[in-house]
Image (cartoon, rainbow, N blue to C red; front, side, top):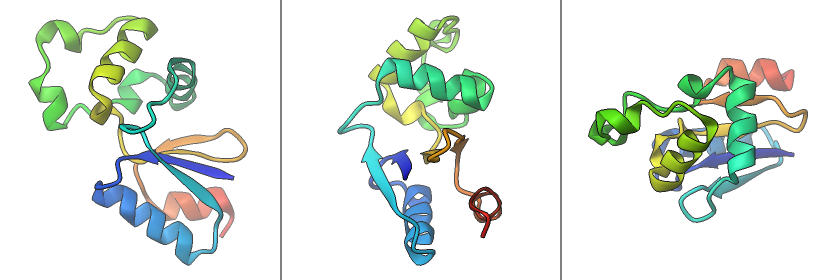
Length: 117
């Protein structure tokens, strides 16, 4: 099953949810403000994406509001602590497919390709 992590009021998350429903694809949605992603899972997902730079939304108002010191997170522990404090830093949605593949954002073409539709 697909696990979709995001924020319940995020328009991109809603688009991804609607698209998956339209395709009849079984998924679960987790609002990571209500149910934070475990640090070990965050590290795993960041690694699967190619690093924290791919997972963190650096164009968000949340990112811009951080201090220079906070933006210099240099370790997995520092990143997971920062995300625990500011969950909106994670790009949305964060999609984890049944085979363990991880994607951020919603792109219908990429979803279709991944799902073989």
